[in-house]
Length: 634
Image (cartoon, rainbow, N blue to C red; front, top):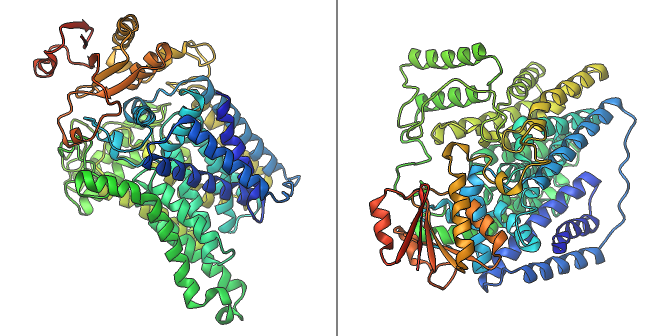
């Protein structure tokens, strides 16, 4: 487990090696370099089937040594005795400490993490490669993998999932730093930059996600970094800014596909704002600036796009070979039944999606308020003759309902930050600040692109986390101009509003009878799976297989994809056990399994009573029903 220390050591060495203008800029550059190095290690070692614990350890040691040999002096950050900055900094540190402790004490337990974020890490580790493998659930192979690459590093170096949650937590720190820098690009002073960081730190959705094992915060950090480096590239401040922009943009796109909707407008506007600021700063020498000759103007976008494409190319190639499209199939089972995109486009689907997605962010404690929001949205739909549960724009089996005041990372509302964003947008319009107006327009474009393209479904609130974090710099730039007492009141309000998300996380609570301080780690894997009521089945299967000594286990997840708790519990008791999928009937069956051996047992999840699936395993002489699970043994 001591090998996990190589990751912070490498990041620290990169921080020392980077040439930069300040410690925050240096940190963000080091983070982008760290992410690029982690991606490159996995992809390059994967070509030789060598993604192993010791290969990664050796690679990180080389990175740390090479970076340390290039170390430069680091000026100490100077903290001005400004009460607003001090309150905001103290608030950010407090949130980071508590979320970091929760991330360390809790195992990964988000439902999506149990279904595909962590299972794909397990199979990559088994085959020492990120090649595609047979699976009924295509999210495990075709979705963007960079966040899980980082989890793979933590998983292999630590010998388990002990530090996997720290990937999202680290991204939350990077996002705080990034938004403060972007706020500076929008003209915010020290107070505005500190407020931007605090807005990012106190987003309920961000707090809840920062201790889990999903990828929304990782995508958000890369997106914010891309916006910052786009502004600097537009201003032609440093020769490596275009490379940093390309790497950050590429990592965002390779982390979550929603970046394709959020990034274009934000990056373009940031580039324009940087160029405009540079032009206004040096109007007389604009035509004579060496850095702004046409070759340079063309070279920077080319470099950035080339870096972004290089990072995404391996996944594009693998998806193309599987589906004929760089982004893979349009649904997780390749059958179109649960298609992500809207079946029809137009202004009515756009308005419907925007209203329903906004309502999810407005949940409050008051049932009367929530019903009022619901009735308003329904009334607008009726006025426009739109079906608010139109199957063409709504996830199958989903039904629009009043918003809820949830403390869950999937659908936590961020109503106060949304209100502050609306207020900041009004101030930008009133003051006619071009940079603020264009940035507001870019945020609105990202939101509308999301609503126009993707079907509405419950629990989509989390997918707006990158956009909400990207809005923090605008709020910092606007509200940072308030007088100190008012700014401090705003900071205290944000911190008070963050308390429920910080201490009462529904699946990783700090306090209460299910607190991570004293909860059993094995049972914490099921904290987000209560609706299935099958915890006893998992433990029953583990007990059965623990006695059997089976070394290669087949898992049929065609009826239930939540396989990671079974993998984690079995690896605790039998570290050498290996897994593969059975009963795969889709196109992925042509890929070699992660383990080149026949399974000595098969667990069919949620297969009791399913004669079609049970018939696949007639060759096994012994079958045992354990709740809804069925175990087949040779």
